[in-house]
Length: 72
Image (tube, rainbow, N blue to C red):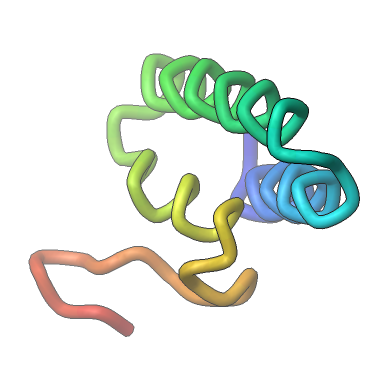
């Protein structure tokens, strides 16, 4: 998958979290965890924590994960 694909998935999960109740949000977060693990298994450079932070709205959709400890 490409960065563009990861962004699309993160955006849709983020948007879904905004329109559902707490119980459904838990389900979306669980799916996001499984997807992050699968993406990491496919690409060891995939940053699971950044992906999940974007879904939770803690980071901007267009943000980039840190490389070598430096956020860009």
